[in-house]
Image 1 (cartoon, rainbow, N blue to C red):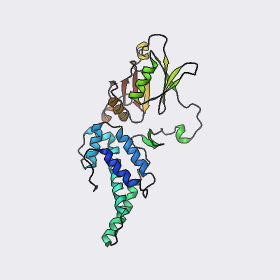
Image 2: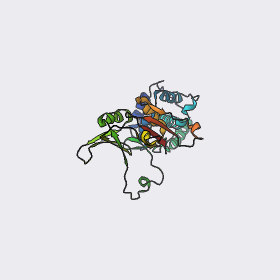
Image 3: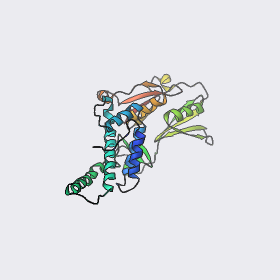
Image 4: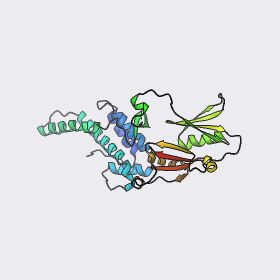
Length: 275
């Protein structure tokens, strides 16, 4: 149960209020990490989904079905707000307390552990690493079990009529970072985001997407932990979606993974599929 007067629509103010409480330091060591994870995941949502989160904070549970798959994010957000209020309340110790007051404070202290159980745990397939929300590795991967692995990642090669123009698209619309490597045997631009790498190389002849040349459906697959977050990010950037993302309930009966397809500036169809 929340007692503070939170703004109706400005989630940034809510996180500022949480930060004011947590930065004092007498709370769980991962409380700030929890706040940063929730903040970054909320920031990746479209404005409507953020507004639903604010409605949930103010006690509304009659949210549309489209909120079901990100409901764990709303629940953790509400739980952290309650945690911050309890921490702030417990910091003030009255000079005179009745037996009832003492029992209330004791129960509140014990309840903090329930909130803290979630701190540092993955949410919607993401966890905090080096101050960033990053996808959780799959079970049994080398990153998880520290097994020796020689292959770090692979890179798709995209021939381009204008690699610089393509690089600008992937940087500004898709969130990749570009590195221009002109000192190698094949001058190219290297695009990276998380564990995905794309090499853009200048083509000697007219460029056509692989799917048009070979009769396949897509030019590249990108596997993600939570397609909805990436889908909303691309929609917000104005990227053309060639195949829409199905609702979670509808995707249960699909023969393929839950996925969507976007078109890049050179006409390639990139399929984004859930792990």
